[in-house]
Image 1 (cartoon, rainbow, N blue to C red):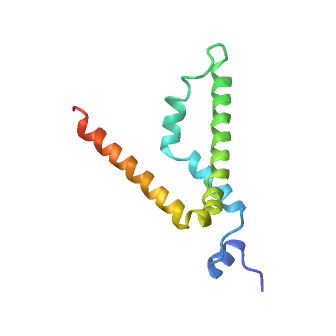
Image 2 (cartoon, rainbow, N blue to C red; image 1 turned 45 degrees about the vertical axis):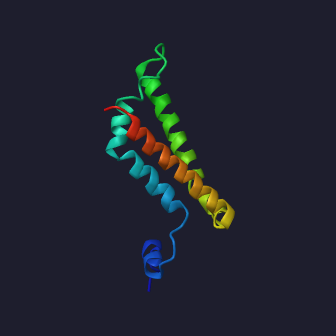
Image 3 (cartoon, rainbow, N blue to C red; image 1 turned 60 degrees about the vertical axis):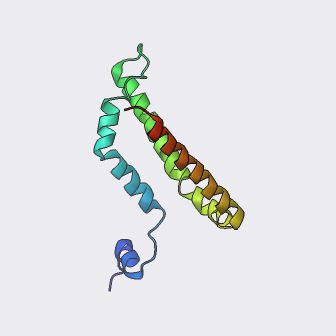
Length: 116
């Protein structure tokens, strides 16, 4: 009998997949979204240095975008996991509720006082 593949093993046991799974599917889904194509063809070329050839400028900007995506995907998930236990105490929770209330009231005031 052959051993089941990793995909079927994780689906059968309900255990999370290996750590490479999200790093493989995340960039693929990020690259294939329509907003990426619109962003890369619309506002992305505008800050390109004018003396660089277009191909090099787009390559440089695409590498910058890839680097920012990797940095974001590497920092965003662990941050709440580390901050979670500290945020579940009473004092930070009250501070977050107050800050959220102030922001929402501020948005409400801006909406009501702005002429349309």
